[in-house]
Length: 210
Image (cartoon, rainbow, N blue to C red):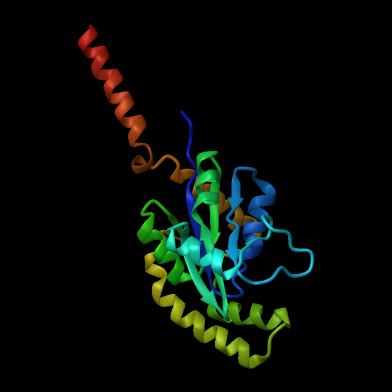
């Protein structure tokens, strides 16, 4: 039976460690693909088209929107960012489980369009640990840390919309839990209707042939 991949959206509070978890997942297992976004922003440093992003002109991106070629998109600080449908479909059809890292509003839009999408939310064990991690990064002022904490409080209102919550207390434990959840999803009955019909037909045919 050829196994189609699963579309997965991973969200999480800033500072939850979701990026690190996904990097480890991709490093440890070869059946995952991280979705590559399209953007109208200019490449930075050594960024390569088709690796970090698909770089598009505004005209090209708006054409993709008009032709329904994006799973979701948003305009952020004057630039478009979006998830190309063709790339994701290609990866899913090859059997890869495709991971999208998107915030809550985008995640719910994806789920609306593709009800089979698996939604995972990454969180630290407590608000105190989240703040500790944000401060520990040393990259932001306390004002920005407080803004991120307020944003996290808003995001927490949408947690019930997700299929699974992953508590990132220990990195390797969380990576293994994410992998196990995704692999278990492949055996959900709603994802195996074709096989269920096939086995029923075979069994009915066998009974009739007795």
